Length: 281
Length: 309
Image (cartoon, rainbow over all chains, first blue to last red; front, side, top):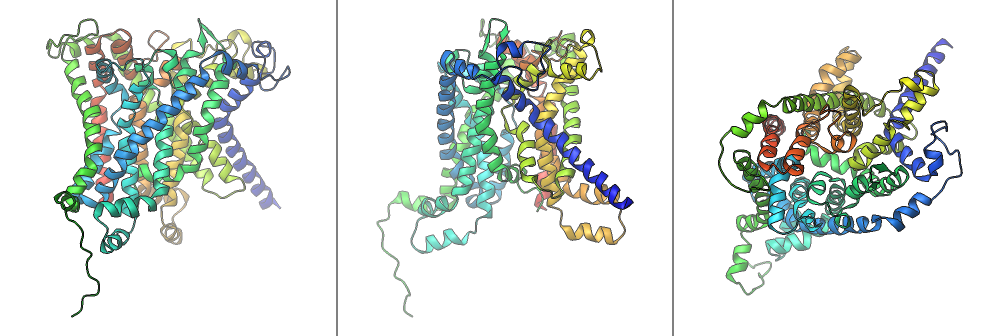
């Protein structure tokens, strides 16, 4: 009986700890949701209980966001930037990853590590010279500057990710194709690419989320409201004068967060094995 | 002897002959990626180094060489010294807090229980969602008047309304806030890294340790921890690099204030180089990150090498 009680206590402590972590991780998002659905008088009254609705919930903030702000424009900008960066990244990283895994032998291994290390070169070290380069190219205040710059971290990342995947793929598949009369290039296009669609999909998803998460380059290069990507727009452009309109800001943050959250959860395991590069065998 | 299959005769051009050589095609395949990185990471990096020893501003884009004068000016500036100290405090404070939470969280999630998948999906959110957006939510939670944290503490009778803290308005609390937000963003990543490490330890090793009489602590710190160290080190390196060089949390939450109390290197480089247009001093400030980054890179290479053996 006493054993059972101790066990019960242990179980309770375990679930309490789990609950603590879940609340810690999700509370700010709950806060976005509840704020975005509250009326302003409800929000700005310190005597109200903040955790729940004291007045009927409203969609006014969302309506305002879509009708009175550039929110849809920012969504579109982010989509265009994302698609272009994904295209540039795939075209360069896919052959590079394959080459480093299969065609360049021992030097490919070292080259792969060097490329990956460039992923660690921080934006705050490069943003000053890059902003001058972008000004020289006439791209300042344009979202195309981001299309040009974002591949500097997505290419290293995806090359590394794909390199790991190609290494794990049995080499016999291409050998069979070459024996059957395929050229090396043909084997890559006709056999390797179709067989690595899951890895390519992972690279696409992560490239896209990396472009959505990026903030520093966007902040540095773009100040024109209609050129901003969604993350920058929501974080810096919904403040009018000195006044924060928390309802709209939280609504925007929530909408922009959802797709990234879903994508991450679906591809998390691949991401982890990608960045740790199979650090343990 | 009869040939089994006649090779099909194909029109052979010199180009396709070249493309069929592994080394040649390999170089062609890897060239675009290398070029892109060289042009937009390598060249800007050299430019940054050159700016830092010149007198370049956006109003006067001269390339006059001034030697180490910029560095000397910066190093003696008390604001910069404070910034440097803040950067270390911010990085190690948030990494430490994040790692403690991560280790503890991973320990919990190791055990199967109903709903574990959902719990994991929820816990990963702070790291998945763009940090700029989450930071804005925290800013609202730390609001001087409508802070939900203060409301809760007042309702529980811990403090009265008049003594409610102004989170982002007082220097020490503001630093605590940026550390908390960054640790909050980092701990799910630490959990995932620890989990990936622990599950990669073969069960028979743990079993053998138990048979040999190793207790809980001994098992954890003398057997499992050394085995997962390479994977944890890679995770930690990521955490340190991205925290040490970040500016988004500070920019959005406190804008470096109050009175530079939360100013960090990345933020200061942005303020001087972009906002004030003093590119050469801004570059010099950013380059102060380099020694730490180099240390981290060397550490990373050592761990990657170890994996090879």
